[in-house]
Image 1 (cartoon, one colour):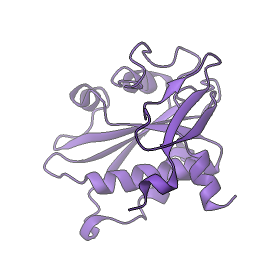
Image 2: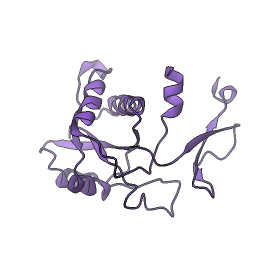
Image 3: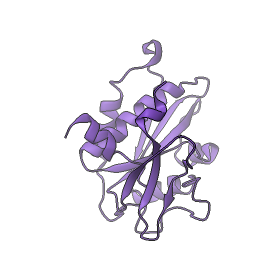
Image 4: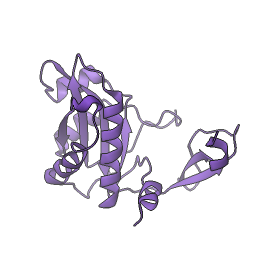
Length: 187
């Protein structure tokens, strides 16, 4: 698969085959790939918490706000929830949003290469998540990546400048993601 094909396959998946488990070593491998990516001034401020057991998964799930553009949807039902999560953390005193984004995208691309899908979350009840997962004092969760084997189809719809860019689900529950055409993003 070419890199472009991998990027196009890497969508934000929000429904999964929950019964298809992910092993902790698979999540650790994704972190191992991400830790080797670029870091501002090579400060390497990120730390990671991986969870894939039912009890921890439920704790994480209960802190997430799912799909802002789908206000009537509270997230996946039981049986369609993520099989694991990677929580990106850093020291409470450190702000490294670029590092977080680079790491998260790398994790999702690497996950997609092994037929996993995921979704990154910044809309998280951080204080509750820190407490529920016993994130060490002085550290805080920054971003959550939900992972699993995708149960939904996500398609890209090319649209022109000025079109509605909100993602949506059609009557067949296919998730549509409008993306501006190349000629609309080149200056």
